[in-house]
Image (cartoon, rainbow, N blue to C red; front, side, top):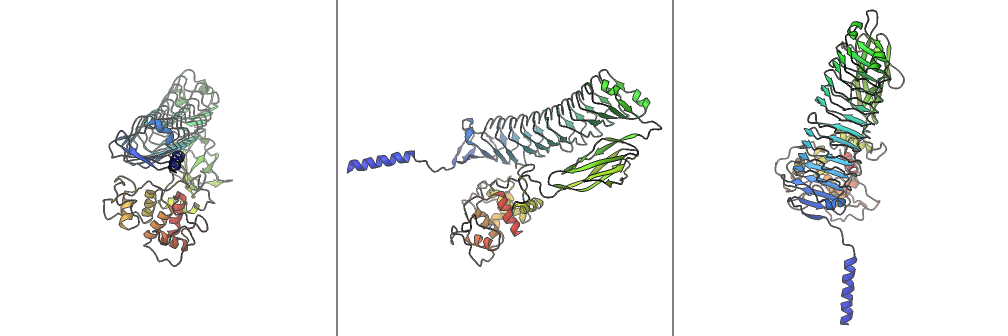
Length: 583
């Protein structure tokens, strides 16, 4: 009998040793003293005290799929270099510096969320080689953007918020980049900014730019047009080298010299100069064999005084159009850079008295609101509508600028189809500043909404009221967090309680039960007259009345006809839909 008992115990121990254990979140401290949590599904949260740099051992890189950084002032050099399983980064608060090559080589990284309003520096090659990263919106708080910060990434769209401190080659070799937006106030487009971005088709040059440095747009093979502002004084050598699709360019009056090799091997067919031009340096237009017409806004005598150096044969052999007393004249036509659409110009000049037709092209999901053509004397020209969104006007004897307005009709997010159940809810939430997109043109509707986000949404729905206290009762809610006031307000009003007496657990997913309770308490616990048909909602559960009321009033439905699934985390789409139904 004793032998049998021993045999049974040994067998039981053996079975326990080979049975998989239930996965729990791992918690601990890094050598720098930073606290970390790593969940079984690869979500790494690093929470600091506002003084230490964040990092994580490279030997465990394959375990990290999502990274949340909170209350850490700096990500050190190569902090998460070559973390090839990492797909998402959320930078929450107090972060001011992303160090050199901090995320370089993170080839699976698809999304970076900048929620830190204190970020000032993105270091050299910080995101280089992040080939899965498709869009980025660089915060306006950034004052230093390091050399080649996004070198060889998979970006298709980029928006730069900072007007100063931009390094060299920030978007160099981004072969998928189609559209880029540079900020007002920028004065210099640095060397190699868009070098070899061969898919780049649209980029604005802010009116404040005075200098375009070497190779800034070199090898941008898909760039078909670009507007150079008055005030620009220096276009350095090679700036537009090998821009194969660029067929016309208008040089502003503030540029008096065209430097060597500036437009070498470009696809230019027409070039417009002002009568302030003094010289064209050697090789400026070498190998530009497509140039047929040069428009000079001056007299024959003024053109004869322009010093054209050797190896600019395409300019010398082109037909030169100057102003004659008997010539009606040719004047420049420009189009203003606006949001949500573009104005497509077939040519950038037209002869006085001729009919000129242009087309308005809204971005996907956008519509044209208004359009007008104004001459440089301030006169608005009469527009004749043509087919589609084309318009025509008669060219006056001066320059013309085309401007107007497009608007987003709500389909701003490529991942929010118009037939989705949450389409109107997302449109309403964005319009009322309750939430915004996860990226430049994505909402991430299936992404999990955490507790802090859910409370922030409710707070904004209430009008973002000031809390009575400035002290949060939860020690894990940093004072610099965007949701700090929202959590205080929600706690004061009995809308939320902590996960523990002194912790809120802001980054955990908000469950269906929790959001039902939050909404019910936000509405001051209205009366309930019936019960929902869900077998998994215990009548004594803290959220039972909330679920019953929500079901009764069409705010919340079940995951199945008879199941509510209270412990499942809510998606962003679900939560904005719940809020839309109670607005």
